[in-house]
Length: 146
Image (cartoon, rainbow, N blue to C red):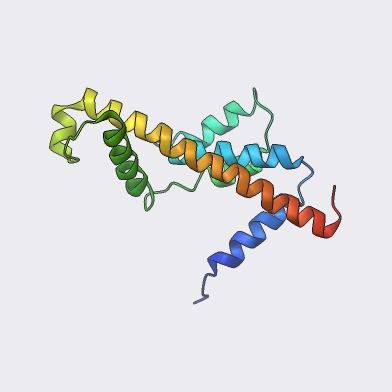
């Protein structure tokens, strides 16, 4: 069985992005949009939403689609709980996070989750934008790619 080297795969992913014909800004916007859509609870509609959004906003679709899979069945619970905790802190609502509570207080818990998701998704998408910009520029400068 082959050992998966995540660091190497990430490096290859960013090299492929840096070699794309798109501008650094388009690639970075794609990374940011893909990250936002991935972390925000879109419940399986992330990729179709990215494709639809690409019809109206100019960004690198490959970067956006690639990063729209950051959230998956393994990471989604983490992002949901983090978003809920952040939303609870911001709104000053201390509602216990469990299934029974969701049924009983759906409007409250949903609003708390929405606010938290906007903050977590927004923060991570801004980080993705600047990190991608830095990596792509550094690679392109090193290789003499415009």
